[in-house]
Length: 130
Image 1 (cartoon, rainbow, N blue to C red):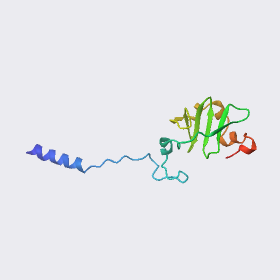
Image 2 (image 1 turned 60 degrees about the vertical axis):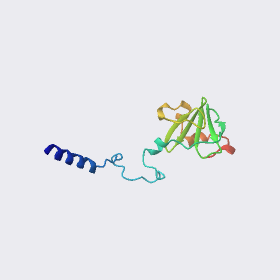
Image 3 (image 1 turned 120 degrees about the vertical axis):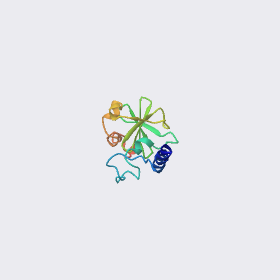
Image 4 (image 1 turned 180 degrees about the vertical axis):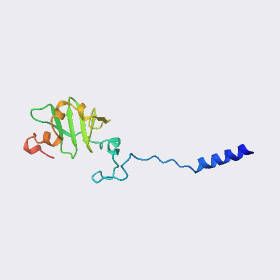
């Protein structure tokens, strides 16, 4: 009888427990400028999907192509697409991905030489877009 009583208490205590996964320490809220996406989630979500292939233009004196006419930082080096989104780099075999995260130190040399804005400044005046 005592075993049944103790087992009943144990089951009752477990049934009342709710396990809620917590976020990383120190990230109680969403900092400004993250568009309502909690820190770290942008990298997990990946960049937006590019439905149509963007127009690519070779940046003079480099081996880097930049996508023009879109509001995203998309580059192509050696046939591989690189997408800078929410401060994270992604690479993929074409404009639709699939995207995988890329560490900044693993970017091709042409993309390591400057920021996207600096690279785009090398474009002829009619093609510049920040």
